Structures are given as C-alpha cells and as structure tokens.
Image (tube, rainbow, N blue to C red; front, side):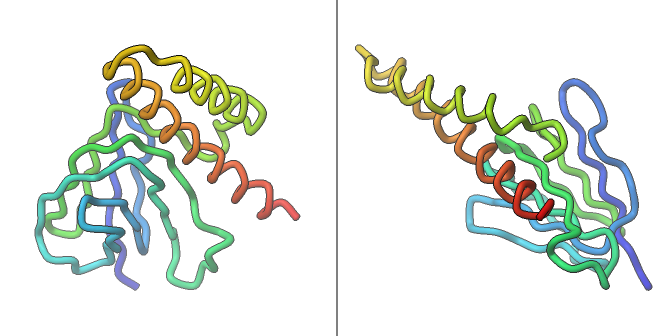
Length: 143
C-alpha cells in the first residue's frame, strides 16, 4: 500500500510528521483530499479542520483531527507539507475551555465599538467554533 508523507508545521514547531493514507484539508475552494500519487500543487488552507486517515482501512472514527486557522499547502512527490501559524490536535482541546472562549468572543463581538474590534471578535468566534466542533467529534468517538 502506498502512503503519502504528511508534514504539518507551525510557528512553534512540527505538529505531525508521518506516513498517512489520506489528508482532508479546508481550502478557499472547499475541502480537498490528498491521497498517495496526488498531482503536485500549491494552495491555500483556510480556517477549519485537517483530517488525517493513517491507513486506508481506518474508519472515519479513527481519523486524527487538527484545528487550523489556515496556511499554505504544497504537494510534491508523495510529500504533503502544510505550513500554518497554529494547529491544535484534538487531544489538546479542552471542550470547557473552548466553550468559554467562544462565549467570550461572542460577548466581545456584541460590545465591539469599531470595525477592527468587530473583525477581531468574529475571527475568535470562528476559531473557537471549530475547536468546539472537534471537541464534539472527540466526545462522540469516546462513546
């Protein structure tokens, strides 16, 4: 079975570096899937969830999830490099903290007095909404 090498790099260092079967990435034109033998490409990742399937036989419940705020994607010679400012693995997300941060961001948006504050608050809402989504996936998986 052929695999693709995934290298997920953040400002703080390497978050993931291993051979995998499939990676699903949010992009400006929608979700894309990268499998072994994918054509070379460079694209932009957007805010959302990076899903990683380690083996072709792994069901969706076995996928790894990373929350990202976007970055750059490069595929070449069965190597997928994703460079992002930050990426949090599902295991690093505390659902209660994400919920509190989401609620605080909503409050910030409601109290925003200018466009810059409004946009900052909306960015925080978007970020924590995705973190809550991944926390929910993690919780359902444990059942």
